[in-house]
Image (tube, rainbow, N blue to C red; front, side, top):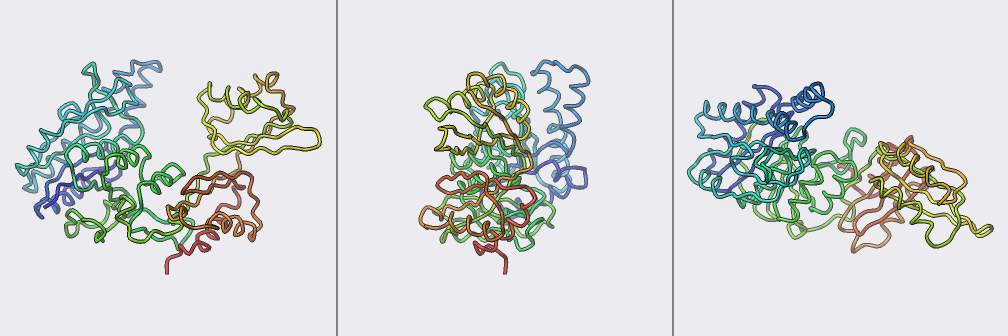
Amino acid sequence: MARLVMKFGGTSVADVERIKNVAAHVKREVDAGNQVAVVVSAMSGKTNELVGWVNEAARLHDAREYDTVVASGEQVTVGLLSIALQEMGVAARSWLGWQVPIRTNGAHSTARITEIDGTNLIERLEQGQVAVIAGFQGIGPDNRITTLGRGGSDTSAVAIAAAIKAERCDIYTDVDGVYTTDPRIVAKARRLDKISYEEMLEMASLGAKVLQTRSVELAMVHGVRLQVRSSFDAPDAPQGGGEGANYNGPGTLVCGEDEIVEQEVVSGIAYTKDEAKITVQKVQDQPGVAAKIFGPLADASINVDMIVQDVSEEDKRTDVTFTVPASDLARAEDVLRKAQADIGFEELKSDTDVVKLSIIGVGMRSHAGVAQKMFQTLADKGINIHVISTSEIKVSVLIDAEYTELALRALHSAYELDAA
């Protein structure tokens, strides 16, 4: 017997028929003798509809009332799933965030979880009752409903798994696991049986949409094992706790490095198109210039990612190239132009037709030549690299967007990630 948290997103509960399918997945685990807590999102599209209604009522609205409205989507889902489970003969009860309680800070619409008391949930689980819990929501210091923002339901599920000391948190989604790269682009991409928290965190932050970064961070901190599974597979045999390195269940297990017997040098390749390149041309190569460029951007809350500096020996001037989110490009250019007199640059150039491509793997720590292979592979394909950044388990390059598919396929083969 195991204690599990099962999380289902909006597409998995998009209508009553799919909710019944979710109930069948839950019943499978209950019939195996497992204690089960379920965390659900609102039906697909419902949260956007509720947000639209709020904005229609008033563009400048009270954030507390916004949360009251938007949180109602999950209330419908937990009620319907509880009813579907009861109809199947499974003892189930719905829980809203304030009933658990899931306590958060007071940042309405972007709240952070501060504490979850799992005592009541554990008591009900041990009595054989399934707890069906509304994700994405909690209760603030002022006893008002709060919502957790993007990825809130995944975060709720991981936090609840930690609070009730679950053996695993199963994240059911519309894909059947984490792949070595985007299978829509690389036909030979393969599903990973296991991936470490650190690798998953890098992949999530670099464009992989399977899990939200916040939920992976929380899982790593609390040691919550995550399993990514497809909710559209037919309910099959129960998976139980999936203990240790012997785990061979469906989907992908996100866990500590100690559970992965042999680490790949490179586990996956991620990419993101939401990048813009800015080049500040002809600034004086002297102390303090970087601070003058990046200080105003930081003050404007614009996140700068990759940075490279190209110094000319002839006139002691330098070009500084860096990337920002594409959505922040216009603001970044405006901030820099307003600071032009202080920075002393001659010209500002930008480009949105670029892609950041990253190789990721904890095996890089103990292997030399990983980055060199990346650079040589791209060179062999005639692909120019604009900017490079590295970390202990990642190498990222900025390339022209037109070469995305070619680069992904070439690197996937170069690091021997292709499926047999």
